[in-house]
Length: 462
Image 1 (cartoon, rainbow, N blue to C red):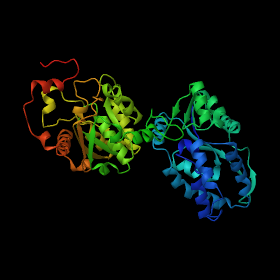
Image 2: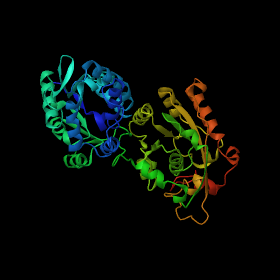
Image 3: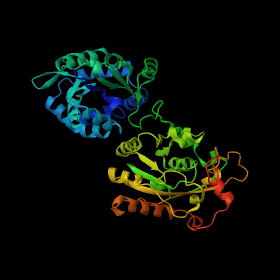
Image 4: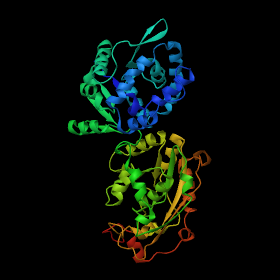
C-alpha cells in the first residue's frame, strides 16, 4: 500500500489564519456583514502567534450554527472568491515541498477544520487531490445549522483520515502529516512521517520529546523560529555599525537591494568578514540575505553563527556540488534574497591585489534559472578587519578601527548580459569592480609583507 500526504491549513500550509480571507469572501456574496466581531482582530493575532486554543475551536464549532439559512450556492461562490486570495497566503517554501511529494506520486490531502464548501476550491487550485474538512448539513440548497458528520478536529480529524485511507487503500505508516497544532497529535502519531510545521509551544515540546522534525515553511530549511520570529529579526537589531566597534562602515545604495521578491546579491570577496559587512546591508533593508558560503566561513567563530542565523547555504566543495545551487534555486523561487561570492574564495597572495576580478558562473546561472535580478555589491576594507592570514577578526582594534566601504549597484537583468555564461559572468565582475574605490582598480606590485597577509594562516609564499 502506498502512502499519502496530509496537510493542515492554518499556520501550516498558510502563513497564518484563513479566517480573514474567508470572512471577506462571505461578505462579498452577502452572507455576513462586512463589519467584524468586537475583538476579532486581537483574537486572530493571538491565534497567528500562539496557535489553536480551546477558545478558538469553540468559536469554530459555533460557525455551523451561524451558517443556518445560508445558500449553499453563495457559500460555494464565496469559496471560489477566497481561493485566489488564500493562494497568496501559502508559505513561500510550501510549493517546493508539495512539488517534491507530487514527484513521488503521493496523493495530497488537505485535512482541516475549515468548512468544506469554503476551502475545497482553494484545495483544487493549490493542486491537492482531495479534501478532508468539516461538512455542514444541507437541506434544499441551504445550510441547516448542523454538522454533517463530525467536527474535523483532533481525534475526529484522525478518524476521518483513517476512513479516507481505508477507502483509498493508503497506508498511514507510509504517509506524511504536516501540522502546527498540539491538537493534531493523534494524526501526527498515526503516520510514519510526522512533521511539526511552525509548531505551537506545546507541540514544539512534544516534537523535541518524540524527535519529530520541525519545519518553518516561510523560511529556508534549517532556519529556526520562536513565537513567529526568526533569528534574523533579532540579529538585524544587533548587526549595526555601532554594535561592531572594531570596524567603521560606510554603506551606499542599500535601498537598491530592498525590492521584494527574488534577488541575487553578488559581492566581491576579500575577507571572511564580508558576511558581516553584507549583514549590515541586510539590516538596513530589513530582509535577510541567504548566502552561499564556503564551509570554512560557515564553521568559523563569530561570523559562522551570524551567517547560519540568516540561513546561509553551506558550500562544501568536497561533497555534492549541486546541492547548494539547488537550495539557492528553491530559495529564489520562494522569493528570497540569495547572496553569492562569484569568486568562490578569497584570492591568495598576489592574486589578492589583481584589479581584475574573476568569477565562477553560478550567479548568472541562478539568474537564468529563476529570472531573478542580480544586484552587484562592491566591498572594500574588510581585509583590514579580518586579514586572510588571521584565524579570527581583530576585535581588539577599537581605538583606530579600519573603514569598511560597501556600495550597492543597480540591479542587473540577466537578459541584458551576454548569452555566453562565461562572458556574462565577466560583465558582472566588471560591474562589481566599478563599485570599488579607485585604488582597487589600479594595478600595483604588492610587497612581500602584503602578500603574506593575503595568505591563509600557516601558508608560506612560494
